[in-house]
Image (cartoon, rainbow, N blue to C red; front, top):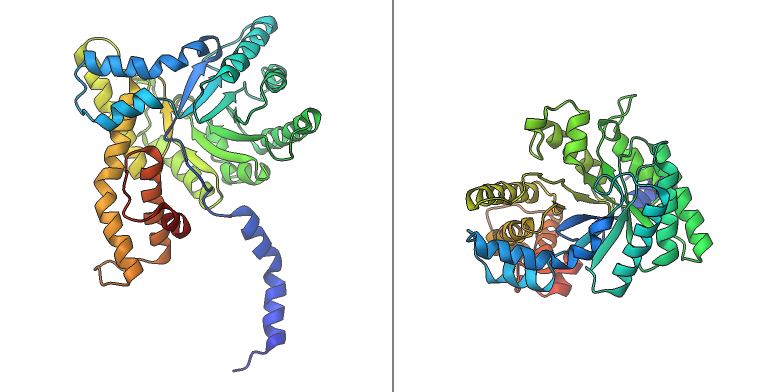
Length: 378
């Protein structure tokens, strides 16, 4: 052997900065439960969000839901919305300051009174010039009235300067309200092609995560804003359009192992009308949810109460369909048996993570292993 301790030390020293970068930038999957969806409710209609489960169950009964499942019905009765966003952006529109101020205060009161979903947040207007000051005012006023944990949704992000401004804003608000440093976090909505590919050809979305300095918790794809900006005709705007798949593939690569979670967008084909129309919308939504899950997007947007039925039906089916095979593969990996599949540690982590997600969302009651063991493996 020709290398000595000095050689080892030299290589260690040369890579120390990169080691520190990897640890900070790629800490791995964010621990804990990820909601399977996000529901956006306009701020002036927030007082109706607690009715969503009942509306979904009623729609299932009136239109003979094609995929009956007691677990889905139990979920809709107990916890229909996992992740709620009070929307002051597109769903709310532009109002005068007095109106929006009143809506902010009322929303804070409704949420504080409870009950409320396990995850919630606030979608402010964008930091573009036309809506910037109103956006800041809404967030400030909401914090003045509601200081339990919530996530801020930052829409229509077009570049790193807006994310840097958001970081500065969070720091100022934390100091002003006496909050712990880093407690204010935000998710970035990818609704513009410039948020995916920069003018110089670089992947903007990767820079957005870096610029967020650990405060970005998620990337949410915006189906219709992105498609329209990319020039896709309205009739063909969809979560499964090739332009959407490209954007989401870049988002997925940028977010991998960073702890930043991914969410797919929505479909605006709603389960309303006669039974034939409702069934057609359900079929589409169920297929799109399943498609997203198969591509590693474990969260999506729901726009209507009756979409919750197919959200949970498709999600539960996805995890139940793969449960036995995942348990078998993981058990053989741990026992080092010959399974015919050369699984590596990364695959074992993915298998454990898959089973944990199935437990978290309620699809599985028995994942074949103790939760503690799966958590350790994942």
